[in-house]
Image (cartoon, rainbow, N blue to C red; front, top):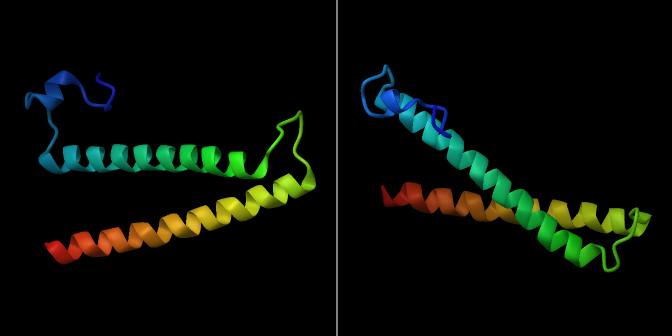
Length: 92
């Protein structure tokens, strides 16, 4: 079994996977990679911005700042993502 969840026989055409199965698996893996990158970017950006001196716990102001930062980051990402999808669909 490969890291994609398919065996080598399936990927080489000797198995029972259809083109749609492979496309669905690729889309799923791409979505997972995008989600992981989003979380990583939020962690880097918001933590650096909101927690100037890390300690054993977060203060209430750091927690509030992180909450607002994550909300804004997600809203921005959603806006950019929607614009990108619209642009790609218009190019078809």
